[in-house]
Image (cartoon, rainbow, N blue to C red; front, side, top):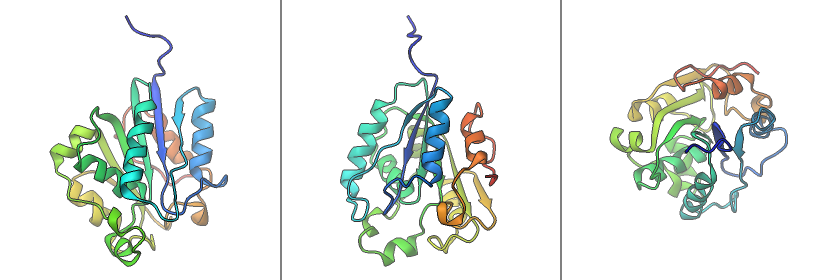
Length: 203
C-alpha cells in the first residue's frame, strides 16, 4: 500500500568550504522556494566548514541523505561538496541510488592541492559503474571563469566522469560574489521532470 504522506520530490542541498549558509546565497533562496512549493528539502550546516574533515562530512552526507523520504531524490552539491560526493560514490556509501545529482562549480585539482585544509577532498577516480550505482543522472554546471577551477570543470570533472556539463559564461564560482543570489534557472531545473535539461544561468 502506498503512503500518500510520502513527498514526491526531495532535495538535499550540500554546501562547500567556509560556507556557513549565508542568507544571500542561492542555496538559501532555493531551499525556501522549494519548501514553499511543498517539496521536501534538507539543507544542513556541515561541521567545521573552515577546517572540514572528509570522513566527518561523508558521515553527515549519509545521515542527511537517509532522512529524505521522497519518492524522487535530488542532490545538489556546490563547490567542495562536489568532490566529497564523489568520495562517497567511490566508497560505495550511496547504497540506494538517487535520481539526480548536480555538481555545481566543483573546485579544481590545483586549487585543492594548494590548500592543505581541503587537499584530502581531492576527487578520487570514479568509474561509470560506480557513478551509475549512486545516481541515475549526474550533471555538472560551472562557470567558464571560475577562479577555484582553473582547469575548467568540464575538463576536470565532466569529461572524466562521462557526464554532461553546462558551462555558463562569466558566472565564476556561482556564489553570491558572482550574483547568485536568486537563481531561477536552477529552480527551473529542479522542477523539471528529469535531469536531462540544461541548467540556465538566468537569475
